[in-house]
Image (cartoon, rainbow over all chains, first blue to last red; front, top):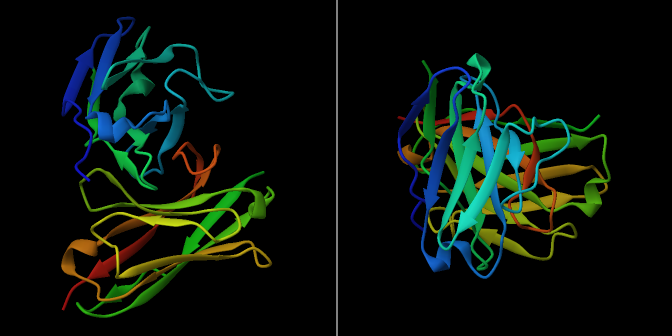
Length: 110
Length: 120
């Protein structure tokens, strides 16, 4: 059960777009599309951003979008804002009664 | 309003045991799969365990299998994590999370976390 691979850091200026990747094996993603993304500010609990690869829960701005190509999922944050500076984590259901998270990406808004 | 409130975190010696609780309110607890996720100080999120809405089906990360047991009491709207044979690397904030979609890890609500410190 190795973690999904995310870049440790990403950055962008206000108004720009940033994409964070999340790479695993076919075993990590299983035959499912249960990829989720979470945002975590320092000292806070994670917040649910994206589920089933592309779906946004109510209340999450449409600046956040998800996609997947093969064994790589991606989170794109468009129109970067200062409050988007946080840690971002992907997760996937593996199909073997387990879930795996990515190592996390620290997003800096320049 | 959905609320998840963890408790039971403490300082415990290596080899010791601890039971965490997660009190749920504001939603039909007995209809949702639930998970435990942990985060060591300064580190990333790590999935620990999940349990089906009726308590019958469970899953564990390899790192805790055989040492931790997840359970639930739907009459009390409470999720549990029994942790035995604790090791230094079990030190972390432990979060409970509600699953939006049947065991998929789509955790739409999280508690605030409870800190477990394993140290002599």
